[in-house]
Length: 180
Length: 174
Image (cartoon, rainbow over all chains, first blue to last red; front, top):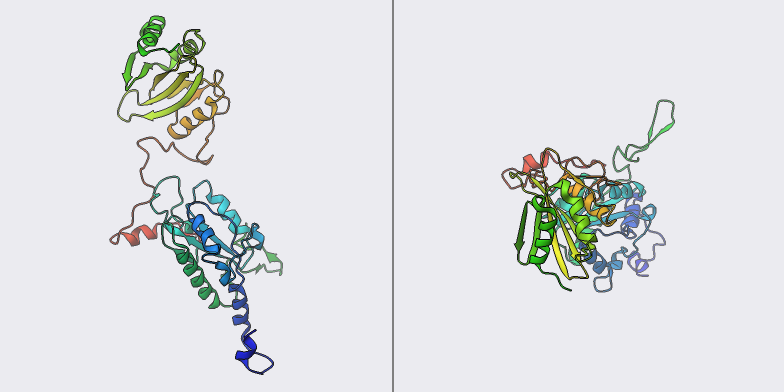
């Protein structure tokens, strides 16, 4: 397959567990299937044959949040939609990442009014912001590759204290802060 | 038979007299300014008279004329399919007592339109079977289309005040 040729006739390859796990996470990162506005059209174009996100293992959109690793918030989030987006995020299993795609998801763009959440980072923690109105598919792909680079540098320790499983004095597991 | 504005104006003013505060015409549309209490009799007359037959409620709209008395206005567009004519009813609603009788018993389609006018302007439609918010979240405070509601939701960040605006932003931690 090519890897053997590069590794020579060694029979085995050594690496760190962290590098191997992060490599696996980047190359099969499944986005959640949903789009909120016109950015979703560009997201679909990025996954279609011209731009072909499957080159990076990103083409499998999962309709269930339980199977998804990545939430691409493509479009403006209305205040009525915000609890729904947050619930979808809470239902995704760890580890999970968020890309705010486009100006509206990043900062509400031109919609500085009562109806739109002023940046989706008010309701979910965002890893990568992609600028553009809407961003070209190349921009989204660039953002996804940036996220891959970020994931490759992650430690195997819990991603944050809030996501860690906590125990009380008697040793029983306490619910995580991050979950509802 | 097609109606014209003069015929309808004479017919309504002849029937209701002083209840019609003002009859105006703008770009061919005939409009009557009336009080909330006179709405139901006039609407019933327009709908059920054999020579008028304004059977179609085209729209209900709320308007906020901030600084004017009465401050609010509810605008009804009625259309007569048989006579190919449209008439506009403008009901002035004072800010102190923003109540208008509901016309849901006459046109079930008024349900959503009256809910929207209540949601956006806070105009109460007496007799509406289920007057609740239709567009905004159920727990929303205020009526956003009023002219004295804030125009922008967040202060616009420029380079000179970016840090102040950013410090007030409620970022999600997890």
